[in-house]
Image (cartoon, rainbow, N blue to C red; front, side, top):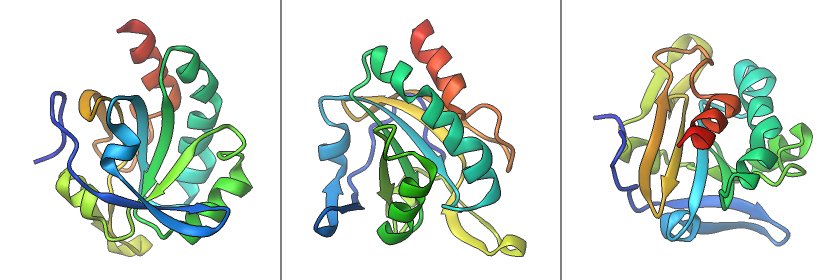
Length: 164
C-alpha cells in the first residue's frame, strides 16, 4: 500500500556523501522533531529528474525554508557516490538540499512506492512523489500516477505548504 497522509515514516538508513566520504543517517535523524519537504525521484541523471523535477525543487527550496521548513531532501534509489555527483552538478547542494541514497530501496519499499520500468533500465526504483513530513508523520503527499512530473514538483508542494 502506498504512503498516505497520516502515515508515520518507517525506520530506515540512508547513505549520504560528506567531506570524509559516505556515511549513514537514520529516519529519526532526518525527520524526527522537524518539518521536512521530501521529494523522491526514480534516478539521478535521468532526463525527467535532471531536467524538470530536481530544478523545480532547487527553485522552491529557499521559499520552503522561509515558510518554516527545517530541511529539503531528495530521495533516490541510487548510491551515495552518484547522488554526490548529481548534487554537485545540478546546484542542489548549493541550494541547501540534502540528497539521501536509499541504495537498497528499503525505505521506498516500506512506503509501498517501488516500481520498475525495464525498457529504460529502471528496476526496483522509487515512484516519483513529494511529501511534507512533520515529526515523521506525513501531512502532505503527492504521488505521480505515471512517469509524468506534474503534482510532485517543488512549486506544487510550496503552494500546499503556504496554503496549510
